[in-house]
Image: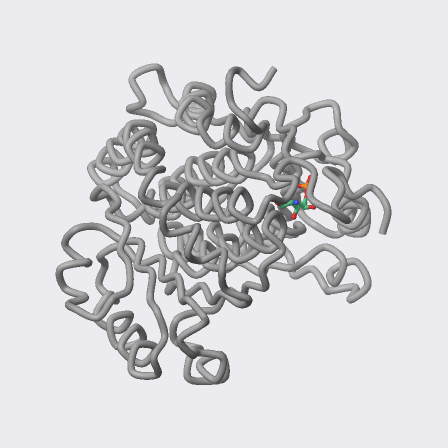
Length: 364
Ligand code: M6R
């Protein structure tokens, strides 16, 4: 069932353009020019805040959604890992929309957090891969992420499917709340339609990533940096690398570098920077210079324009296609996943069944 791939993880990485298409088929009109996502009983004009709760990779999808909800729909978002949320017993201001995100729909902490929220949140929405799961059944509205069966313990296509589902939900919220006009929505929907093609392009640069990954695999520690909506991708890139290659990796917001992690930088410690061109790229260039000034090696994953602006001294670059800002976090999941995959191959680890990990964490 690996369809000619050596590992489920690579098969699932390669499926992502199709998965994202399936998400858009489910939640947009066939031409992709209007939103059809139905959230019965959810009125975004009455929502005062969103509370997102999840674990692991699903939590990082929630973190991207936080950037999006706040920016495009002007909705404040609180985000928690489920194991903290359930015991913190947080208060629920009126108008709280609770969102639980889970591939399996059976994660024990996420389910317990949902049960705690029942009766306190105005509405409970879940983003799940399995409509039959406990989390789906116990939500007011279960929104399917349409990723299909994910076998690899390291989650890949479920992450991008969660993001593709969230992005539609955010645009719906933005329009309902009067924060996005029809012309802007039309532009953003055009951005979404570019995503599957751009993802296929990103998958095709696998060879370059594999070369870089073989070098990265020789390190003991790896830093991942990202800023703004790319910060969650730095966290996800580090988690993926840890899970399957057993290299120690840390993801940080680029601006946090000086507040501690820069102490780790030396010529042995590569820094992976996930930074497409955007309004903040200049600041990222200074962060990279700080790393390079300490003998650190920077692997810059970015587009041609930003790579040119970064100047000399960068150890390695991976050139990604230009992409509209909204969809960049979804697109950049691919090089983060491929880097981890090839590092694991170089280390000879069990890619699909990494030690100590389970696909579904149904106990605390
Ligand atoms: O099934 P869930 O989405 O609730 O799972 C949450 C995490 O256990 C999961 O994302 C985990 O972090 C993966 N191994 C990440 O690759």
